[in-house]
Image (cartoon, rainbow, N blue to C red; front, side, top):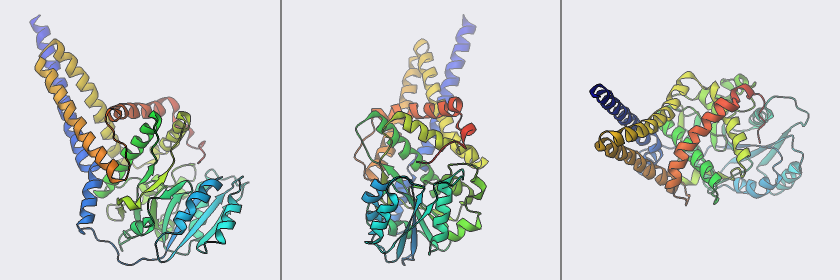
Length: 392
């Protein structure tokens, strides 16, 4: 009996120690990376971040596939940005709707709108990469700002806010592409997942560990695109025109972020679970092509998160049959992490202009989404199907 009690006590101490160590990294992660956007924005407001004072000419690149309705609604918001000299190039990626007609009518109103197209019969694995490449080749300007046809800018200063980061040493500027809110459980999961991932990659870029960006709000130099071979290294993949390009080209010194609320782009999220599943599979299908360094730095958080929850459950259960102090201490550490999450996540929500507050759904999403990603990676095996995804 005494030996059993000894082993039980050792297990209790070991589980609590693991819980405590996992908490330390989680607190570090949230304070250093997730809270990085808020910290960086404070520096911007204190004018301790250097921006260029001029407005160099810019080319906005948009690839559109069957997006006639979105082009009607959102393209004028981009064409009327408060910026001195810019052009907008829309690439019609083999659309079967009235995209070309909409573009022709808008050209009569906006002289800074240009367009080209990818033929419907094109057999490339990724016609989107081909389309973006065509747009970049057609661009008159060195600075390029990319977004999607279903996105609209948060303000008329989106272009100016993104471009102000192009100092002489900057090749890439990362922005935030948000999703609009709807009163559904699925929407809460999608918006939380997008926000958390964005805070992570923006926060890491702020501390010079850039590893990805999103094509809904991404800028880079035309020369950097061609000097690094464009999309040539990833032409065997349908996706990856944004994150893999940044993962390959970004360095500690050539990448900056823009986190002002005016610089956000908004788009409508998926409405059906199967659509979100497909989108997640498409995104995860290229994560295996990240650099080894990037894989290591982004896998630590979900591993320590899982360790934290498992160690909490083990400590709590062992404490019930052992020391009540262990139960209380485990709950205390759990609450520390939860309140850190609650404060940092909801502060970011308010900063970017959302109205939603994550309380109970924060805990649900924090547990569900990593399990969902694991399910996709193990069961759906998107790496095996990386050549079978079409962009939408």
